[in-house]
Image (tube, rainbow, N blue to C red; front, side, top):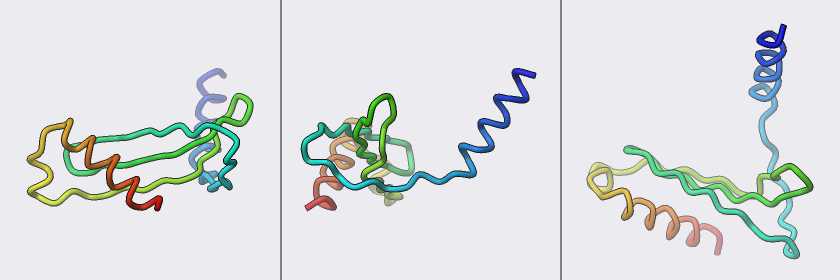
Amino acid sequence: EDCEQAFWQLKVTLATPPVLSKLDPTKKLIVYLLVLVEAISTVLVQEEGSEQRLIYFVSWVLQVQEMRCQVMEKLALTLVNAAHHLR
């Protein structure tokens, strides 16, 4: 029964796409950076009580030359691209 309930919760979560929320300038932003071999992503969220509201999301597929970079260089690229898109 616990497995069935967990599976049902997972189905509901996957079937409900996140909706972007309006930025509240009075609250702090939380930045999540993801670096993979072939892609980089940035997510900005704000906490609303015990939940995190999605403010911004962007993902890039890396070019062959960029895939050869070190993880720290990719992380810097992720942050620079996010800052560029948020101007």
